[in-house]
Length: 400
Image (tube, rainbow, N blue to C red; front, side):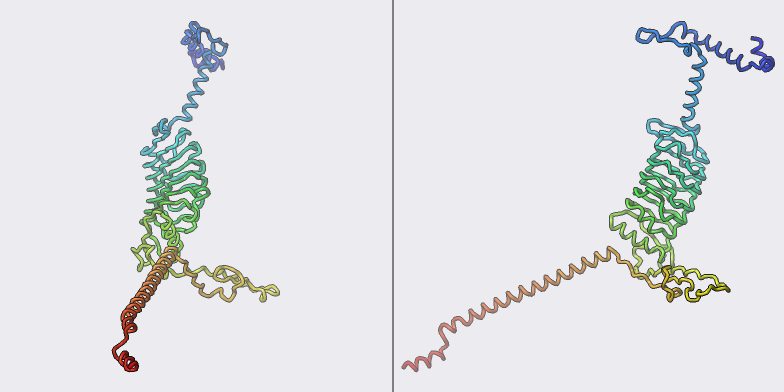
């Protein structure tokens, strides 16, 4: 035993690991001697004891592996995990990034009120069953592409009160069950033409309290199940670039959608006005970009004067050379569905009233003619039957 306690002798002999292992196993055997002396009976019978069961070192190895597995799937040190509700409460913990070692079975992750500044790609790979993700009130300024692509069951994503400036195309791809997307209270100045693949089930979209001046109509049309959309407190530029959005909003409200409306911030004559109340006639056609002019060259190939560069029309189509530098034609004003329906209804009402008036006039004329005819018949009946005195005297004189 003196050699075991003396480190120098252990190192010099080169058998330190072997001696320590022997000492630990000896201690474990002494502590677990009751297992060998008094084995547990199961159903009145003694279980078979193998050589592995007699060696406590095997139990030490199993216990270590179990502890490591439990630690790998345990809750992060600063978080509170509730197994019953499958919730990980990590709010107000001072995190600067998405915490690791989250339980893979959680469905609700609360990360609000931290200092997270970026969401890296595949940040939620370890939690594929998430349904609600709250990242509000952080310092997030960028979201990497594919950051949420593993969250196929995600239904609610809250990114409000952050520092996001841009949302790239397909940022929210592969979220087929996403229903609520809250991007309010950021500094977003531009939204993409699409949020990504499989985002057509979104029913609520909030972009209020941002710096948006316009929004692409194609983005809104890519969300066919949208029921509620919030736009307020953005510096909307009510010019030709927002005309498509006006048409979409009219159709959306006609279908029963809910919105807080769009209030114009510019130009000055429309500031403070509701976009839906701005007449169509005030939206001119947007000027299209001129076609690029080919660079001048001192050398020309034979026949280049006849062929030349293809001249593009106002819509970028070749073959319209004479109109390349002309002012583009104003597009035909799209017909408003509500205005068209109102026109049809008003026309029908007017026609109905006119028809009723004509029918009333006809009935009145017929009644008047019948009454007049009856009156004359009653007045002339006795005269024809008895005759007048003047008519009777000649008749009597002739008889005489």
